[in-house]
Every structure is written in structure tokens, then in C-alpha cells.
Length: 261
Image (cartoon, rainbow, N blue to C red; front, side, top):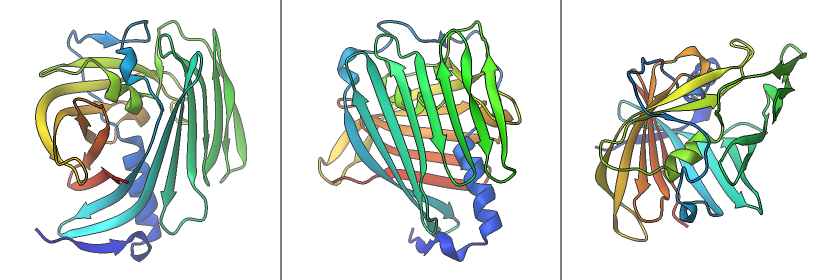
């Protein structure tokens, strides 16, 4: 099917902002029936997957036969002595500034240490220890809210879980729930779940390496109280490189596709 390609500038700005918020949240609430609960722990993932890498993904929205270019998502993973740092930069077409999120986790068990997020709408910084401390500053209202809470359960940082998905011991029919901590001014923070609904084998045609065997991972999460979104990841079985992510909310669909360089 031929897709007409237009840029984000040609859409109504209010509609754009609403759609982007929905897809950045990427969430749906589901019930969990005795699923394995994944929490930070040693030997959760094979050490060979924890490696530095830099990659870019083209972000677009599909509407009928039209592909609307949203922007570029840059991801950089750095493995230090005892830590792993993940920096994500979202460059939206027609926007002057980027959205930048930085996450630091312990290398030994992938538990969270630090998360910062900066964009045109808000700034947020969170430090994870025995207590969770930081701040959330709404740039629209100029209101700053202190973050200070103590949670009993083990959890991952919400900004780290897309990276974690690529490293899990994936196999056919693998299902699990993942505990993550997410803060928003509406929910005031707390532990929510990522629901890994299933894994199956597939093939992905790359530009440089031809056809590759991939894990096709379907998941949802409870971030933001539920927007009805579902994500499908296509991950290389040998390298664990993410090739494609599809996101759907009802009839709305988005894609992030690896730019092979």
C-alpha cells in the first residue's frame, strides 16, 4: 500500500500535542492473573546483552494511507564500571527544543539510581535510594512539586523498561509483569505494571543485513492511568537490537523504525 507522507507541521497543533502525549504514555490497564513479576535482581539478564550502543529511530504516525513524520528518537546506552546509563533524545519536527530523558541504573541488578527528564512542558529529577526524592516543575503553570516517598516493593525506573525489554530472557510464549516506578502530577507517583502479553518468533528484513530472526514482543503498561495503548517490539534474536516498535491506540497507529547507518 502506498502511503502519502506529510510533516507534523501540517496538522492542527492541539491535535498533535494530544496525540503525542497519548503515545508517549503508551499505556493500558490490565488485570494480572498470577503472572511472573519481574523485579530488579542479579542474573536477571544475560551479561552479554548489557553493552554500550547508540541508535536512531524514525518516528511516524499512520493515518489511513498517510504517514505523518513526527521526528527522530536517539538512544544512547553507556555501560560504566557499576552503572548503566540510558539517554533518550526525542527531536520532534517543528519543535525548537528536544525532549531529553536520562536514566542511571545499577549494573548488578538494574535497580534505579537516577532519572531526569527535560522538555518544553516540564522538568523532572528523581533520585532513588531508600527514599525517592526529587522535584517536578510544570513550565506552563510555573508550579514546582517536591517528590518524596518511600516504597516497599522492588521496581525499575519507568524510563528504563523499554531498554530492559530488549535484554530479557525472551522465548516463545514468554509472559510476565514488570514492576516500574512512574511519577506524574496526576498520580503523584507509585508502582505500576508493564504487562508482557506474549512473545513469538518472526522475521524482519533489514537494509544492511538482509532477513533477520526476531522476537516479536507484545506489551502494555499502566503508566498514566491508562490510555488504551499497545506496543509491539521487533527485536533481533542474536544481537537484541530493536528494529521496530509499533504503537496503537484504537484506530491510531505509530511506528518507530531503526535508521540503519
